[in-house]
Image (cartoon, rainbow, N blue to C red; front, side, top):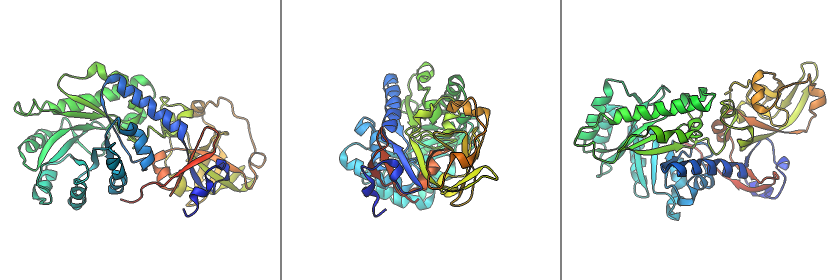
Length: 406
């Protein structure tokens, strides 16, 4: 960290290993693609900042003020984004976890700088907010609807939802901002049609919840926020099913088999959906060959589970060599990764249709620098204290320091 700026101007392959490398041109293309889709539909957009957790990427996702709201999962993410408030490009942040008592004093302090919106899915949250004395104005809240991910949220068919909506309408501690859905299970989609179907389910789940509003409250502005990353790529289907009287907001940015913040990055999990191209991946990990083992046809690299995570996808292994995708990190320990041949029909999504019986001892040598595509960019990025940002020629042009901690 003391010398990360010293690598600016050098080739990416000169970086220390392991290092996280970001392609800025790819990030910009991915963001511009989604911005254009949102613009074409004339809907609001709220990026999630949890994947790359940095001022630079957040500014890009907001379009330098074109969009002015974010979602964050941690306090350091919100605090890290505060300079954008001073720049005049950020007005509002949704804290993307259902609230709990110990977080409220810290969130209340942040309300002096920007508007904080809360997430709730349980009447107990109203109890907590009514007991909290740190703010005078009511908290704006999203009611989180579970449309099949089975993470946070109340199922729209649940008998508890009408009571929760009624409680929100009656409590002086909160005011309804809208309904929030996230179809994390959309990562099972493999066609634009199936992704569009999941997107429609998200919307219908939120709309059905909005129908529970009392007549007295039905005339207010209500935001319906939807959009996991794969479905963001088929956002053009939304317009056909958007009811009158509701304001639609697309949230996207990062969480993985539930990912809304990952669209600037993309990864092997998303490539496996068939909705994202190999070249849309902006994140790579540079690692180095430490040894080669001809007897078992494997090589050792210095990127293990800490650097890569233990998640996988339809493509087996924990990472894939970018220019030799038939070679994967097939096993890991804390700092060790084992490269081995990993042949699967799913390699077709990486453009590989025929694999030769290659030998590790002929493919890798000690000291070789190897670039890897990761399975889950959010978790991989969280392991690194600095992101090295490269241009089209893989020359380091910037070094971004991400926000850390909870």
